[in-house]
Length: 376
Image (cartoon, rainbow, N blue to C red; front, side, top):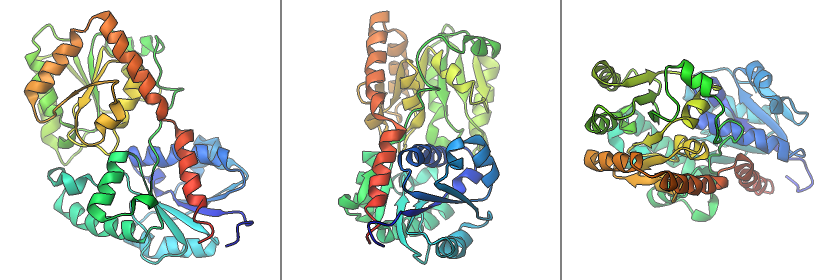
Protein backbone atom coordinates (compact mmCIF):
# COMPACT_ATOMS: atom_id res chain seq x y z
CA UNK A 1 0.00 0.00 0.00
CA UNK A 2 1.42 3.38 -0.96
CA UNK A 3 1.28 6.43 1.25
CA UNK A 4 -0.76 8.36 -1.36
CA UNK A 5 -3.65 5.93 -1.39
CA UNK A 6 -6.73 6.56 0.71
CA UNK A 7 -6.77 4.20 3.63
CA UNK A 8 -9.59 1.65 3.48
CA UNK A 9 -10.22 0.87 7.11
CA UNK A 10 -12.36 -2.11 8.00
CA UNK A 11 -13.99 -2.23 11.44
CA UNK A 12 -15.52 -5.30 13.04
CA UNK A 13 -18.59 -3.54 14.43
CA UNK A 14 -20.57 -6.56 15.61
CA UNK A 15 -20.74 -5.02 19.11
CA UNK A 16 -23.53 -2.83 17.78
CA UNK A 17 -25.70 -5.94 17.45
CA UNK A 18 -25.13 -6.98 21.07
CA UNK A 19 -26.10 -5.75 24.51
CA UNK A 20 -25.35 -2.29 25.86
CA UNK A 21 -21.96 -2.61 27.52
CA UNK A 22 -18.62 -0.85 27.73
CA UNK A 23 -17.05 -2.21 24.54
CA UNK A 24 -20.16 -1.29 22.52
CA UNK A 25 -20.16 2.26 23.87
CA UNK A 26 -16.43 2.57 23.26
CA UNK A 27 -16.37 1.48 19.63
CA UNK A 28 -19.49 3.51 18.80
CA UNK A 29 -18.35 6.80 20.32
CA UNK A 30 -14.73 6.65 19.27
CA UNK A 31 -15.72 6.07 15.63
CA UNK A 32 -18.32 8.82 15.68
CA UNK A 33 -15.41 11.18 16.34
CA UNK A 34 -12.97 9.39 14.04
CA UNK A 35 -15.31 9.66 11.06
CA UNK A 36 -15.69 13.42 11.54
CA UNK A 37 -11.95 13.93 12.04
CA UNK A 38 -10.77 11.75 9.12
CA UNK A 39 -12.65 12.64 5.91
CA UNK A 40 -9.84 11.18 3.77
CA UNK A 41 -10.21 7.70 5.27
CA UNK A 42 -12.69 5.23 3.77
CA UNK A 43 -14.45 3.56 6.71
CA UNK A 44 -16.05 0.16 6.11
CA UNK A 45 -18.07 -1.17 9.05
CA UNK A 46 -19.07 -4.83 9.26
CA UNK A 47 -22.18 -5.52 11.34
CA UNK A 48 -25.61 -7.11 11.25
CA UNK A 49 -28.11 -4.29 11.81
CA UNK A 50 -26.80 -1.65 9.44
CA UNK A 51 -30.12 0.18 9.16
CA UNK A 52 -30.47 0.96 12.90
CA UNK A 53 -26.88 2.24 13.11
CA UNK A 54 -27.41 4.61 10.18
CA UNK A 55 -30.78 5.73 11.51
CA UNK A 56 -29.60 6.48 15.03
CA UNK A 57 -26.21 8.06 14.32
CA UNK A 58 -25.79 10.43 11.39
CA UNK A 59 -22.00 10.07 11.36
CA UNK A 60 -22.45 6.60 9.86
CA UNK A 61 -24.29 8.12 6.90
CA UNK A 62 -21.23 10.17 5.91
CA UNK A 63 -19.87 10.02 2.36
CA UNK A 64 -16.71 8.24 3.50
CA UNK A 65 -18.60 5.47 5.32
CA UNK A 66 -19.82 2.14 3.97
CA UNK A 67 -21.96 -0.16 6.11
CA UNK A 68 -21.66 -3.82 5.14
CA UNK A 69 -24.03 -6.47 6.40
CA UNK A 70 -22.25 -9.23 8.33
CA UNK A 71 -24.68 -11.91 9.52
CA UNK A 72 -24.70 -12.59 13.24
CA UNK A 73 -23.30 -15.92 14.29
CA UNK A 74 -20.79 -17.73 16.43
CA UNK A 75 -17.51 -15.90 17.00
CA UNK A 76 -15.53 -18.73 15.46
CA UNK A 77 -17.42 -18.29 12.19
CA UNK A 78 -16.91 -14.54 12.26
CA UNK A 79 -13.20 -14.78 12.98
CA UNK A 80 -12.49 -17.81 10.83
CA UNK A 81 -14.56 -17.11 7.73
CA UNK A 82 -16.61 -13.94 7.54
CA UNK A 83 -14.08 -11.26 8.45
CA UNK A 84 -11.29 -12.65 6.25
CA UNK A 85 -13.72 -12.92 3.32
CA UNK A 86 -15.20 -9.45 3.85
CA UNK A 87 -11.75 -7.87 4.10
CA UNK A 88 -10.80 -9.49 0.79
CA UNK A 89 -14.11 -8.62 -0.83
CA UNK A 90 -13.92 -4.95 0.18
CA UNK A 91 -10.16 -4.49 -0.34
CA UNK A 92 -9.46 -3.60 3.27
CA UNK A 93 -5.99 -2.24 4.08
CA UNK A 94 -6.26 -2.24 7.88
CA UNK A 95 -8.78 -4.13 10.03
CA UNK A 96 -9.70 -3.04 13.55
CA UNK A 97 -11.28 -5.59 15.91
CA UNK A 98 -12.24 -5.82 19.58
CA UNK A 99 -10.55 -8.38 21.86
CA UNK A 100 -9.89 -11.01 19.16
CA UNK A 101 -8.33 -11.16 15.68
CA UNK A 102 -9.22 -13.29 12.64
CA UNK A 103 -7.52 -16.66 12.55
CA UNK A 104 -6.33 -15.85 9.02
CA UNK A 105 -4.89 -12.36 8.75
CA UNK A 106 -6.49 -10.71 5.70
CA UNK A 107 -4.63 -7.41 6.14
CA UNK A 108 -2.80 -5.45 8.83
CA UNK A 109 -4.81 -5.89 12.04
CA UNK A 110 -5.23 -3.64 15.05
CA UNK A 111 -7.05 -4.95 18.11
CA UNK A 112 -8.53 -3.24 21.16
CA UNK A 113 -8.33 -5.36 24.30
CA UNK A 114 -10.19 -3.45 26.99
CA UNK A 115 -8.91 -5.51 29.90
CA UNK A 116 -7.63 -8.93 30.94
CA UNK A 117 -9.36 -9.06 34.32
CA UNK A 118 -10.11 -12.76 33.90
CA UNK A 119 -6.37 -13.36 34.35
CA UNK A 120 -6.06 -11.48 37.64
CA UNK A 121 -9.60 -11.96 39.00
CA UNK A 122 -10.68 -15.38 37.69
CA UNK A 123 -13.23 -15.82 40.47
CA UNK A 124 -15.56 -13.46 38.62
CA UNK A 125 -15.54 -15.37 35.32
CA UNK A 126 -16.70 -18.78 34.18
CA UNK A 127 -14.06 -21.49 33.58
CA UNK A 128 -15.20 -21.81 29.98
CA UNK A 129 -14.76 -18.12 29.28
CA UNK A 130 -11.33 -18.06 30.93
CA UNK A 131 -10.10 -20.97 28.84
CA UNK A 132 -11.36 -19.46 25.59
CA UNK A 133 -10.22 -15.91 26.38
CA UNK A 134 -6.72 -16.97 27.38
CA UNK A 135 -6.24 -18.53 23.96
CA UNK A 136 -7.86 -15.85 21.81
CA UNK A 137 -6.60 -12.82 23.74
CA UNK A 138 -3.02 -14.11 23.73
CA UNK A 139 -3.34 -14.80 20.02
CA UNK A 140 -4.55 -11.24 19.47
CA UNK A 141 -1.71 -9.77 21.54
CA UNK A 142 0.81 -11.74 19.55
CA UNK A 143 -0.59 -11.29 16.03
CA UNK A 144 -1.98 -7.75 16.04
CA UNK A 145 0.30 -5.14 14.52
CA UNK A 146 -1.17 -2.59 16.94
CA UNK A 147 -2.85 -3.06 20.31
CA UNK A 148 -5.15 -0.52 21.91
CA UNK A 149 -6.65 -0.46 25.38
CA UNK A 150 -8.65 1.88 27.61
CA UNK A 151 -6.32 2.64 30.52
CA UNK A 152 -2.67 2.71 31.45
CA UNK A 153 -3.47 -0.01 33.96
CA UNK A 154 -4.74 -2.32 31.21
CA UNK A 155 -1.73 -1.48 29.04
CA UNK A 156 0.63 -2.45 31.84
CA UNK A 157 -1.25 -5.72 32.33
CA UNK A 158 -1.08 -6.57 28.62
CA UNK A 159 2.66 -6.04 28.70
CA UNK A 160 3.16 -7.90 31.99
CA UNK A 161 0.97 -10.91 31.30
CA UNK A 162 1.26 -11.32 27.53
CA UNK A 163 4.68 -9.85 26.89
CA UNK A 164 3.29 -7.18 24.58
CA UNK A 165 5.77 -4.58 23.37
CA UNK A 166 4.86 -1.30 25.14
CA UNK A 167 5.70 0.52 21.94
CA UNK A 168 2.86 -1.14 20.06
CA UNK A 169 0.20 -0.58 22.75
CA UNK A 170 -1.69 2.71 22.74
CA UNK A 171 -4.20 3.96 25.31
CA UNK A 172 -7.54 5.20 23.98
CA UNK A 173 -9.39 6.26 27.10
CA UNK A 174 -13.15 6.08 27.24
CA UNK A 175 -14.70 9.50 26.92
CA UNK A 176 -17.52 11.26 28.73
CA UNK A 177 -20.40 12.68 26.71
CA UNK A 178 -20.56 16.23 28.08
CA UNK A 179 -23.91 16.80 26.39
CA UNK A 180 -25.41 14.21 28.76
CA UNK A 181 -23.25 14.28 31.88
CA UNK A 182 -22.81 17.73 33.41
CA UNK A 183 -23.55 19.52 36.72
CA UNK A 184 -26.68 21.53 37.36
CA UNK A 185 -30.40 21.22 37.93
CA UNK A 186 -31.52 19.73 34.62
CA UNK A 187 -33.74 16.68 34.95
CA UNK A 188 -35.05 17.39 38.45
CA UNK A 189 -38.63 16.55 37.41
CA UNK A 190 -37.51 13.23 35.91
CA UNK A 191 -35.88 12.34 39.22
CA UNK A 192 -38.96 13.35 41.20
CA UNK A 193 -41.16 11.27 38.88
CA UNK A 194 -39.15 8.21 39.96
CA UNK A 195 -40.00 8.89 43.59
CA UNK A 196 -36.55 10.26 44.45
CA UNK A 197 -35.61 13.45 46.26
CA UNK A 198 -32.89 15.42 44.51
CA UNK A 199 -29.63 15.43 46.45
CA UNK A 200 -30.92 12.92 48.99
CA UNK A 201 -30.01 9.44 47.80
CA UNK A 202 -26.91 7.29 47.43
CA UNK A 203 -26.46 5.91 43.92
CA UNK A 204 -24.61 2.98 42.37
CA UNK A 205 -24.70 2.09 38.66
CA UNK A 206 -23.54 -1.28 37.41
CA UNK A 207 -24.63 -4.71 36.23
CA UNK A 208 -25.82 -6.97 39.07
CA UNK A 209 -22.88 -9.36 39.22
CA UNK A 210 -20.40 -10.24 42.00
CA UNK A 211 -17.54 -8.22 40.50
CA UNK A 212 -19.50 -5.01 41.06
CA UNK A 213 -19.65 -5.74 44.82
CA UNK A 214 -23.26 -4.74 45.51
CA UNK A 215 -23.52 -7.02 48.52
CA UNK A 216 -20.78 -5.20 50.44
CA UNK A 217 -22.37 -1.86 49.54
CA UNK A 218 -25.74 -2.97 50.91
CA UNK A 219 -24.11 -4.19 54.14
CA UNK A 220 -22.19 -0.94 54.60
CA UNK A 221 -25.27 1.14 53.81
CA UNK A 222 -27.40 -0.73 56.38
CA UNK A 223 -24.75 0.09 58.99
CA UNK A 224 -25.29 3.80 58.33
CA UNK A 225 -28.56 3.47 60.22
CA UNK A 226 -32.20 4.36 59.61
CA UNK A 227 -31.45 8.02 58.93
CA UNK A 228 -29.18 7.23 55.96
CA UNK A 229 -30.30 8.49 52.53
CA UNK A 230 -32.09 5.89 50.39
CA UNK A 231 -29.89 3.57 48.34
CA UNK A 232 -30.64 3.60 44.61
CA UNK A 233 -29.25 0.78 42.49
CA UNK A 234 -29.30 1.02 38.69
CA UNK A 235 -28.23 -2.15 36.90
CA UNK A 236 -29.36 -4.95 34.67
CA UNK A 237 -29.85 -8.32 36.28
CA UNK A 238 -27.36 -11.05 35.37
CA UNK A 239 -29.24 -14.37 35.33
CA UNK A 240 -26.03 -16.16 36.27
CA UNK A 241 -26.01 -14.43 39.67
CA UNK A 242 -29.58 -14.40 41.05
CA UNK A 243 -28.29 -14.11 44.62
CA UNK A 244 -27.28 -10.50 44.00
CA UNK A 245 -30.79 -9.44 43.01
CA UNK A 246 -32.26 -11.53 45.83
CA UNK A 247 -30.11 -9.68 48.39
CA UNK A 248 -31.22 -6.35 46.96
CA UNK A 249 -34.87 -7.35 47.12
CA UNK A 250 -34.53 -8.48 50.75
CA UNK A 251 -32.86 -5.21 51.70
CA UNK A 252 -35.58 -3.28 49.90
CA UNK A 253 -38.27 -4.97 52.01
CA UNK A 254 -36.75 -3.72 55.25
CA UNK A 255 -34.97 -0.55 54.19
CA UNK A 256 -35.07 2.28 51.68
CA UNK A 257 -33.58 0.53 48.64
CA UNK A 258 -34.79 1.16 45.10
CA UNK A 259 -33.72 -0.97 42.13
CA UNK A 260 -34.03 0.19 38.53
CA UNK A 261 -33.09 -2.52 36.05
CA UNK A 262 -33.16 -0.07 33.17
CA UNK A 263 -33.35 3.69 32.79
CA UNK A 264 -33.67 5.53 29.50
CA UNK A 265 -30.72 7.38 28.02
CA UNK A 266 -32.47 10.65 28.88
CA UNK A 267 -33.18 9.65 32.50
CA UNK A 268 -29.92 8.06 33.68
CA UNK A 269 -27.86 11.31 33.46
CA UNK A 270 -30.47 13.11 35.56
CA UNK A 271 -30.46 10.37 38.19
CA UNK A 272 -26.66 10.57 38.40
CA UNK A 273 -26.61 14.40 38.42
CA UNK A 274 -29.01 14.67 41.37
CA UNK A 275 -27.48 11.98 43.60
CA UNK A 276 -26.19 13.08 46.96
CA UNK A 277 -23.35 10.55 46.73
CA UNK A 278 -22.18 8.17 44.01
CA UNK A 279 -20.57 4.91 45.15
CA UNK A 280 -18.71 2.51 42.86
CA UNK A 281 -17.39 -0.42 44.92
CA UNK A 282 -16.30 -2.76 42.09
CA UNK A 283 -13.47 -5.16 42.76
CA UNK A 284 -11.90 -4.73 39.33
CA UNK A 285 -12.37 -2.65 36.18
CA UNK A 286 -10.52 -2.04 32.96
CA UNK A 287 -11.67 1.58 33.09
CA UNK A 288 -14.83 2.31 35.14
CA UNK A 289 -17.08 4.47 32.99
CA UNK A 290 -19.74 5.21 35.66
CA UNK A 291 -17.06 6.82 37.84
CA UNK A 292 -16.05 9.25 35.11
CA UNK A 293 -19.68 10.05 34.27
CA UNK A 294 -20.56 10.74 37.90
CA UNK A 295 -17.50 12.94 38.35
CA UNK A 296 -18.46 14.91 35.23
CA UNK A 297 -21.96 15.35 36.68
CA UNK A 298 -20.74 17.27 39.71
CA UNK A 299 -21.53 14.53 42.24
CA UNK A 300 -19.24 13.50 45.11
CA UNK A 301 -17.80 10.08 44.25
CA UNK A 302 -16.24 7.32 46.30
CA UNK A 303 -14.75 4.31 44.54
CA UNK A 304 -12.40 1.37 44.92
CA UNK A 305 -8.64 1.75 45.14
CA UNK A 306 -7.97 -1.21 42.83
CA UNK A 307 -7.09 -1.84 39.17
CA UNK A 308 -7.89 1.12 36.88
CA UNK A 309 -10.21 3.00 39.21
CA UNK A 310 -7.59 5.18 40.96
CA UNK A 311 -6.29 6.12 37.51
CA UNK A 312 -9.73 7.31 36.44
CA UNK A 313 -10.60 8.99 39.73
CA UNK A 314 -7.29 10.70 40.42
CA UNK A 315 -7.80 13.19 43.24
CA UNK A 316 -11.45 13.68 42.24
CA UNK A 317 -12.88 10.90 44.42
CA UNK A 318 -12.44 9.28 47.82
CA UNK A 319 -10.94 5.79 47.60
CA UNK A 320 -11.44 2.66 49.69
CA UNK A 321 -10.50 -1.01 49.71
CA UNK A 322 -13.45 -2.91 48.17
CA UNK A 323 -12.53 -6.04 50.14
CA UNK A 324 -13.14 -4.23 53.42
CA UNK A 325 -16.77 -3.52 54.28
CA UNK A 326 -15.53 -1.56 57.29
CA UNK A 327 -13.48 0.73 55.06
CA UNK A 328 -16.38 1.16 52.64
CA UNK A 329 -18.67 2.06 55.54
CA UNK A 330 -16.20 4.58 56.97
CA UNK A 331 -15.66 6.20 53.57
CA UNK A 332 -19.40 6.51 52.97
CA UNK A 333 -19.83 8.06 56.41
CA UNK A 334 -16.97 10.48 55.72
CA UNK A 335 -18.43 11.51 52.36
CA UNK A 336 -21.91 12.03 53.77
CA UNK A 337 -20.46 14.13 56.58
CA UNK A 338 -18.50 16.53 54.36
CA UNK A 339 -19.10 20.23 54.79
CA UNK A 340 -20.40 22.16 51.76
CA UNK A 341 -16.89 23.54 51.24
CA UNK A 342 -15.30 20.10 51.34
CA UNK A 343 -17.92 18.75 48.99
CA UNK A 344 -17.38 21.63 46.58
CA UNK A 345 -13.62 21.12 46.56
CA UNK A 346 -14.00 17.41 45.80
CA UNK A 347 -16.41 18.14 42.96
CA UNK A 348 -14.10 20.77 41.44
CA UNK A 349 -11.16 18.36 41.50
CA UNK A 350 -13.36 15.75 39.82
CA UNK A 351 -14.47 18.12 37.08
CA UNK A 352 -10.85 19.01 36.36
CA UNK A 353 -9.87 15.34 36.32
CA UNK A 354 -12.41 14.22 33.75
CA UNK A 355 -11.32 16.86 31.26
CA UNK A 356 -8.82 14.33 29.91
CA UNK A 357 -11.52 11.79 29.05
CA UNK A 358 -12.67 13.02 25.64
CA UNK A 359 -13.74 10.82 22.73
CA UNK A 360 -12.15 13.19 20.20
CA UNK A 361 -8.78 12.92 21.91
CA UNK A 362 -8.99 9.12 21.96
CA UNK A 363 -10.14 9.06 18.33
CA UNK A 364 -7.01 11.00 17.39
CA UNK A 365 -4.83 8.43 19.17
CA UNK A 366 -6.73 5.63 17.44
CA UNK A 367 -6.42 7.08 13.95
CA UNK A 368 -2.75 7.96 14.36
CA UNK A 369 -2.10 4.35 15.27
CA UNK A 370 -4.16 2.93 12.43
CA UNK A 371 -2.62 5.28 9.89
CA UNK A 372 0.84 4.09 10.97
CA UNK A 373 -0.09 0.64 9.67
CA UNK A 374 -0.92 1.80 6.16
CA UNK A 375 2.63 1.31 4.85
CA UNK A 376 3.02 -2.20 6.25
